[in-house]
Image: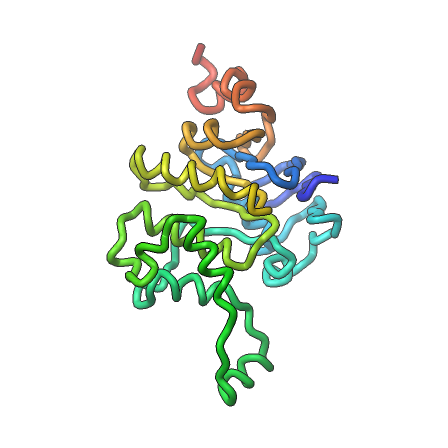
Length: 248
């Protein structure tokens, strides 16, 4: 059984079909890519998987459970988390504290008890993520003091501190130079060994084809190709989607 199973996912925004009967899977311990030209429906796909956009039709199964109607916070607590194109870091907090904020999901009761009887929280997972992502040396600096590439890694770290089963990355290489993208790729390759499956959406073909085992291609909301990086790179439908039908 696949960790993620998406069947017949269809999303409409008014009269626009953003996703049209999309079905795909992600195996546990894999790195899966989702690519497509602008407007293909990639971010809508992530928004729908994480519960921020409702589906008109279709089914989403995660770790053997139907989560199609689950709220975003319930999906997150089940181990399905995401990053956003806008990094949304807390610039007035240190890198370590940015991760600590995301490491705990307080309830109303825990918030009240913490206010009355403050207690220390376990920070071992935060430290592990700092080490995994090579952020220890900048852990006490603020995001404003970091390079763009490091800020993107901090955003990835915030998604990982809750020990998710699956992390969905929305354009993690946006704005990165080639050296920063290669650093990011090396970090992504580490994640399956920690028990985290990855589904990454990006326009950077070098990143996608370099780290993903399986790549899916969206065009105008429809899944037009799936396969290994080599198969997708040479698929005429994919070439046409990116370069136009006259490409050879």
